[in-house]
Picture (cartoon, helix red, strand yellow):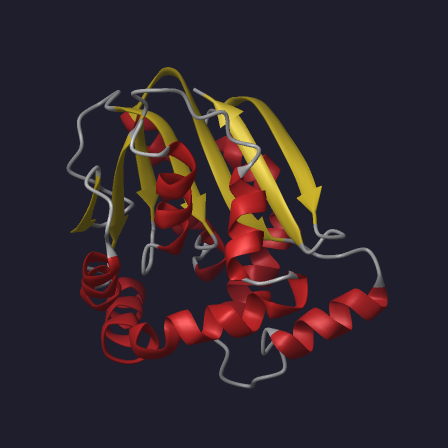
Length: 221
Protein backbone atom coordinates (compact mmCIF):
# COMPACT_ATOMS: atom_id res chain seq x y z
CA UNK A 1 0.00 0.00 0.00
CA UNK A 2 1.35 3.43 -0.96
CA UNK A 3 2.15 6.08 1.64
CA UNK A 4 -0.79 8.18 0.39
CA UNK A 5 -3.22 5.31 0.93
CA UNK A 6 -1.71 4.50 4.32
CA UNK A 7 -2.19 8.09 5.45
CA UNK A 8 -5.77 8.20 4.12
CA UNK A 9 -6.63 4.94 5.84
CA UNK A 10 -5.08 5.94 9.17
CA UNK A 11 -6.67 9.40 9.13
CA UNK A 12 -10.16 8.19 8.22
CA UNK A 13 -10.03 5.10 10.44
CA UNK A 14 -8.90 6.85 13.60
CA UNK A 15 -9.92 10.51 13.25
CA UNK A 16 -12.16 11.59 10.40
CA UNK A 17 -14.72 8.78 10.68
CA UNK A 18 -15.63 9.89 14.20
CA UNK A 19 -16.86 13.33 13.13
CA UNK A 20 -17.50 12.88 9.40
CA UNK A 21 -21.30 12.81 9.61
CA UNK A 22 -21.37 15.93 11.80
CA UNK A 23 -19.06 17.65 9.32
CA UNK A 24 -21.42 16.78 6.45
CA UNK A 25 -24.34 18.35 8.33
CA UNK A 26 -22.28 21.54 8.63
CA UNK A 27 -21.07 21.54 5.01
CA UNK A 28 -24.51 20.98 3.46
CA UNK A 29 -26.49 23.21 5.84
CA UNK A 30 -26.28 26.36 3.62
CA UNK A 31 -27.88 24.43 0.73
CA UNK A 32 -30.92 23.17 2.60
CA UNK A 33 -29.39 20.25 4.45
CA UNK A 34 -27.51 17.08 3.60
CA UNK A 35 -30.57 15.01 2.70
CA UNK A 36 -31.83 17.62 0.23
CA UNK A 37 -28.43 18.03 -1.43
CA UNK A 38 -27.72 14.32 -1.80
CA UNK A 39 -31.21 13.66 -3.15
CA UNK A 40 -30.92 16.47 -5.71
CA UNK A 41 -27.47 15.32 -6.82
CA UNK A 42 -28.62 11.74 -7.45
CA UNK A 43 -31.85 12.94 -9.12
CA UNK A 44 -30.03 13.06 -12.47
CA UNK A 45 -29.34 9.30 -12.38
CA UNK A 46 -31.83 7.11 -14.23
CA UNK A 47 -32.08 4.14 -11.88
CA UNK A 48 -33.80 1.08 -13.34
CA UNK A 49 -35.35 -1.94 -11.65
CA UNK A 50 -32.83 -4.69 -10.87
CA UNK A 51 -29.84 -2.41 -11.45
CA UNK A 52 -26.67 -3.54 -9.73
CA UNK A 53 -25.04 -0.39 -8.36
CA UNK A 54 -21.65 0.31 -6.80
CA UNK A 55 -21.12 3.32 -4.55
CA UNK A 56 -17.37 3.70 -4.93
CA UNK A 57 -15.55 5.49 -2.08
CA UNK A 58 -18.83 5.49 -0.15
CA UNK A 59 -17.51 6.84 3.14
CA UNK A 60 -20.11 6.40 5.86
CA UNK A 61 -22.74 5.48 3.28
CA UNK A 62 -24.89 8.61 3.18
CA UNK A 63 -25.14 8.70 -0.61
CA UNK A 64 -25.68 4.93 -0.61
CA UNK A 65 -28.64 5.39 1.71
CA UNK A 66 -30.01 8.23 -0.43
CA UNK A 67 -29.96 5.91 -3.47
CA UNK A 68 -31.57 3.09 -1.49
CA UNK A 69 -34.30 5.42 -0.25
CA UNK A 70 -35.05 6.59 -3.77
CA UNK A 71 -35.05 3.14 -5.39
CA UNK A 72 -37.09 1.40 -2.64
CA UNK A 73 -35.25 -1.95 -2.74
CA UNK A 74 -35.74 -2.28 -6.52
CA UNK A 75 -31.95 -2.38 -6.98
CA UNK A 76 -28.98 -3.94 -5.20
CA UNK A 77 -26.29 -1.57 -3.94
CA UNK A 78 -22.74 -2.24 -2.79
CA UNK A 79 -20.69 0.40 -1.04
CA UNK A 80 -16.91 0.22 -0.79
CA UNK A 81 -14.30 2.35 0.94
CA UNK A 82 -10.69 1.91 1.95
CA UNK A 83 -11.43 2.99 5.53
CA UNK A 84 -12.50 0.37 8.07
CA UNK A 85 -13.75 3.17 10.31
CA UNK A 86 -16.03 4.61 7.64
CA UNK A 87 -17.40 1.20 6.66
CA UNK A 88 -18.06 0.29 10.29
CA UNK A 89 -20.27 3.36 10.66
CA UNK A 90 -22.02 2.63 7.35
CA UNK A 91 -22.79 -0.93 8.43
CA UNK A 92 -24.07 0.22 11.81
CA UNK A 93 -26.43 2.70 10.12
CA UNK A 94 -27.63 0.35 7.38
CA UNK A 95 -31.35 -0.43 7.49
CA UNK A 96 -31.73 -1.54 3.87
CA UNK A 97 -31.82 -5.29 3.07
CA UNK A 98 -30.34 -4.89 -0.44
CA UNK A 99 -27.40 -2.72 0.62
CA UNK A 100 -24.02 -4.10 1.68
CA UNK A 101 -20.71 -2.49 2.58
CA UNK A 102 -17.16 -3.78 2.21
CA UNK A 103 -13.67 -2.47 2.88
CA UNK A 104 -11.99 -2.35 -0.52
CA UNK A 105 -9.43 -0.37 -2.49
CA UNK A 106 -11.22 1.56 -5.25
CA UNK A 107 -8.13 1.51 -7.46
CA UNK A 108 -8.10 -2.30 -7.46
CA UNK A 109 -11.41 -3.87 -6.47
CA UNK A 110 -12.24 -7.56 -6.20
CA UNK A 111 -15.13 -7.35 -8.65
CA UNK A 112 -15.33 -9.07 -12.01
CA UNK A 113 -15.25 -7.32 -15.37
CA UNK A 114 -18.67 -5.97 -16.29
CA UNK A 115 -20.31 -6.69 -12.95
CA UNK A 116 -22.26 -3.43 -12.40
CA UNK A 117 -24.88 -1.42 -14.28
CA UNK A 118 -23.98 1.85 -12.59
CA UNK A 119 -21.08 3.24 -10.57
CA UNK A 120 -21.47 6.32 -8.37
CA UNK A 121 -18.43 8.14 -6.95
CA UNK A 122 -19.59 10.71 -4.38
CA UNK A 123 -17.30 13.54 -3.26
CA UNK A 124 -14.11 11.50 -3.10
CA UNK A 125 -11.91 12.15 -6.14
CA UNK A 126 -10.96 15.65 -4.95
CA UNK A 127 -9.04 13.97 -2.09
CA UNK A 128 -6.75 12.10 -4.52
CA UNK A 129 -3.78 12.95 -6.69
CA UNK A 130 -4.43 12.76 -10.41
CA UNK A 131 -2.86 9.35 -10.96
CA UNK A 132 -5.12 7.88 -8.26
CA UNK A 133 -8.19 9.64 -9.69
CA UNK A 134 -7.53 8.14 -13.11
CA UNK A 135 -6.92 4.69 -11.63
CA UNK A 136 -10.24 4.82 -9.76
CA UNK A 137 -12.08 5.97 -12.89
CA UNK A 138 -10.48 3.25 -15.02
CA UNK A 139 -11.37 0.64 -12.41
CA UNK A 140 -14.97 1.89 -12.53
CA UNK A 141 -14.85 1.45 -16.30
CA UNK A 142 -13.56 -2.11 -15.97
CA UNK A 143 -16.29 -3.32 -13.61
CA UNK A 144 -19.15 -1.67 -15.53
CA UNK A 145 -21.21 -3.62 -18.02
CA UNK A 146 -21.19 -2.54 -21.64
CA UNK A 147 -23.22 0.68 -21.88
CA UNK A 148 -23.13 0.95 -18.09
CA UNK A 149 -22.90 4.45 -16.64
CA UNK A 150 -20.68 6.34 -14.24
CA UNK A 151 -21.85 9.32 -12.20
CA UNK A 152 -19.29 11.39 -10.32
CA UNK A 153 -20.59 13.85 -7.72
CA UNK A 154 -18.04 16.50 -6.86
CA UNK A 155 -17.44 20.07 -5.75
CA UNK A 156 -16.76 22.69 -8.39
CA UNK A 157 -15.41 26.23 -8.62
CA UNK A 158 -18.42 28.62 -8.50
CA UNK A 159 -18.27 31.52 -10.98
CA UNK A 160 -19.24 34.16 -8.40
CA UNK A 161 -16.43 35.41 -6.14
CA UNK A 162 -18.78 35.86 -3.18
CA UNK A 163 -19.87 32.22 -3.43
CA UNK A 164 -16.26 31.03 -3.62
CA UNK A 165 -15.40 33.01 -0.49
CA UNK A 166 -18.41 31.67 1.40
CA UNK A 167 -17.71 28.08 0.39
CA UNK A 168 -14.03 28.47 1.25
CA UNK A 169 -14.97 29.54 4.76
CA UNK A 170 -17.63 26.86 5.33
CA UNK A 171 -15.53 24.03 3.90
CA UNK A 172 -12.34 25.03 5.74
CA UNK A 173 -10.28 25.94 2.69
CA UNK A 174 -8.51 28.45 4.94
CA UNK A 175 -7.34 25.73 7.34
CA UNK A 176 -3.53 25.44 6.95
CA UNK A 177 -3.45 21.64 7.38
CA UNK A 178 -6.31 20.86 4.99
CA UNK A 179 -4.68 18.06 2.97
CA UNK A 180 -7.50 18.19 0.39
CA UNK A 181 -6.55 21.67 -0.83
CA UNK A 182 -3.78 20.73 -3.33
CA UNK A 183 -5.65 17.73 -4.76
CA UNK A 184 -8.92 19.67 -5.02
CA UNK A 185 -7.16 22.47 -6.91
CA UNK A 186 -5.47 19.93 -9.15
CA UNK A 187 -8.79 18.24 -9.97
CA UNK A 188 -10.38 21.57 -10.86
CA UNK A 189 -7.31 22.58 -12.89
CA UNK A 190 -7.35 19.44 -15.03
CA UNK A 191 -11.14 19.27 -15.21
CA UNK A 192 -13.20 16.38 -13.88
CA UNK A 193 -15.01 15.95 -17.19
CA UNK A 194 -11.69 15.71 -19.02
CA UNK A 195 -10.43 13.08 -16.57
CA UNK A 196 -13.55 10.95 -17.03
CA UNK A 197 -12.92 11.12 -20.78
CA UNK A 198 -9.28 10.16 -20.15
CA UNK A 199 -10.56 7.03 -18.38
CA UNK A 200 -12.16 5.94 -21.70
CA UNK A 201 -15.78 6.86 -21.00
CA UNK A 202 -17.98 8.06 -23.86
CA UNK A 203 -20.76 10.65 -24.15
CA UNK A 204 -19.38 12.47 -21.11
CA UNK A 205 -21.45 15.38 -19.85
CA UNK A 206 -21.27 17.85 -16.98
CA UNK A 207 -24.10 19.41 -14.99
CA UNK A 208 -23.60 22.32 -12.59
CA UNK A 209 -25.87 22.51 -9.55
CA UNK A 210 -26.37 24.86 -6.59
CA UNK A 211 -24.99 27.89 -8.47
CA UNK A 212 -21.87 26.05 -9.56
CA UNK A 213 -20.88 24.80 -6.11
CA UNK A 214 -21.34 21.17 -7.18
CA UNK A 215 -20.76 19.38 -10.46
CA UNK A 216 -22.10 16.09 -11.75
CA UNK A 217 -20.10 14.36 -14.46
CA UNK A 218 -21.63 11.36 -16.22
CA UNK A 219 -20.34 9.01 -18.88
CA UNK A 220 -21.08 5.71 -20.61
CA UNK A 221 -18.76 2.73 -21.00
